[in-house]
Image (cartoon, rainbow, N blue to C red):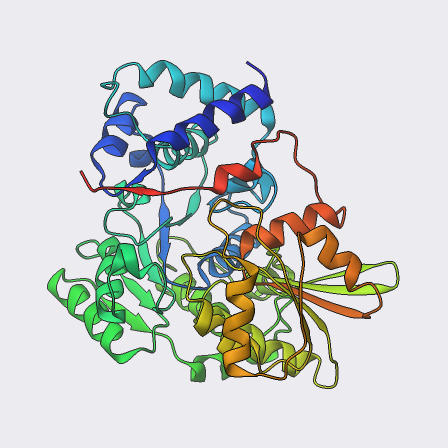
Length: 428
């Protein structure tokens, strides 16, 4: 088996969808020796900011001298982005080795009850981190928390970034429902750190923490004004990233007895953190691109505020592509405040929203906005060639495609970015 064949094997596991429930993940991990029992985790859930917060935590602990594991999803271009040690993506040869191991173990499951792609990859990550003796693993949930495959671990801390409306069809219609699913990662007597400011959601998180005897810490905007955050220039732009940084610092401080970190390492880690696809600025030829995977109203609002703060006098071209299961109207309502011409493209995904639908939502809000419909992202980039600044947003899938088209990164297998496609099957 080579890397392309390993990716194709993982791609074919998508046929089993994404299933809520932990039974198969626990069984798969047990067949692999329960590697999760040998590792220290910081488990991170939330509607937005999970990836950025994970990147900040990883950067701080790496600066402090710890060997770090980082597990995140989705990937933007290469599957290897999902599993990293000391911010180095897993080597392709290791992916092949782990897929071959998983393939042999999958034969012990009934053919009608096989683990899904995400369950298999989650256990692959556990085996890889354990085999390499990571000191601490920053562990991002996939969807929700309570029944997410990542929830088989018993972490040092449970982090919930924030709660907004997203994936309501799976997690529930209100922020309180969604918070209950995210709060499912809270374990008895394990500290909880959150930057949630939605009152209903916060009530659920606090209630869950109290019920499980878990100490909790609430991070607010005021925490961004305290040392060392008040003097750090973050490489990740936007006020929302300052909140994420405060959350990361609060988490590190909460775990000082288990994982000691000097303030100098906190400063170094936050000052050098990198996280692609979140207000990522790319200078190409005579043009500047800003890429941001704002895929729900909460994220679009943060993007709009950050863009207008950083580029207050710029009228950009806005290339937008949104998945059909997202709150298109809510995203448009936030992005329409950015003064620019809009170019709408389908996302290279079977879940894409039709550009006509996005256009109609924009016109309801701002009838005089200039909108151009495009056949694909490549055409949209070509049509916006005379704009000095182009914003590409609306979906991380679109951002991943942009990164590849702009020559920043490339895929090895035709199935690589398609691994991000998923659908939810009924709960077990």
